[in-house]
Length: 357
Image 1 (tube, rainbow, N blue to C red):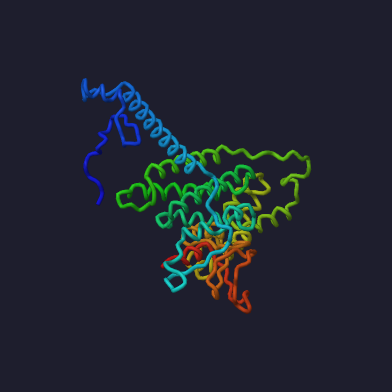
Image 2: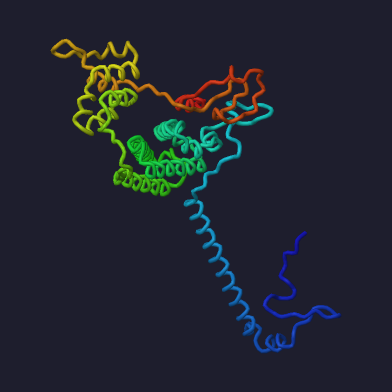
């Protein structure tokens, strides 16, 4: 049994070990004879030094903790695994327990490298937008940090390249509105993490939006041929390659000649048939006084009623044989005889639906 009684050496006194056993020092014996309640000056200094030592240790520990928290909040390095693929399992087996979450897949897949490639940039931006709209409560703390780091890199890339400004503005606006809606319901604990952390993220979003609003397109230093000097046939060819009607309108505001081409009926007819089905178009027919179809007005009306068609140069792929999610140029350990036959391309919404259990 443990010894529960008072130490026989009575704490607060100095003892010396001898051959006959432990004995009090002479100074302590004199002090005890005079007044057993008086503590020696040396003992007071020792206690004072110990107290200062504890205070200094506590201060150092609190300072280290604050420094560590600051580093964790300000770190720009996402937590990514070396493998650029992930096994998606929706139930427990003998080999694997639990299931794969959206946050885990978001951490494991290499989105930082994907935003650097032009063919994958729009795909990642659309995926970030869908996650901001409806999947924020399902992200873990590490996934949230990775999301913010990737979003910051996207904004920095736009500021450096001066391209894709409008889609990123829309992404930031969607993210901000979504956080505001969740913060109002903080009593329901819908978001993982401290409410102050999310308020700090909202401030970052406002700063990024301000930076994008203040961006100024740099004029090219070369003295070659400009866009307005090209022939009208090339202008029309450029407009026909635009998939967003807002880009066509913006291009038409450059000069009067481009403004005339931006009103071309065949151009808006192609946009309508590209994004919407024939059934959708028949439901929203608009005829002018002269009996012509108003394709430009129909495009605006169809855009408000139906989602646009989405096409991406490169997407995430899912192997139906081994249930692995990966990028197309990433080798994954597939055991199928013909891996290409069991590989399917995933849209951003398909990626989200893959984790809806």
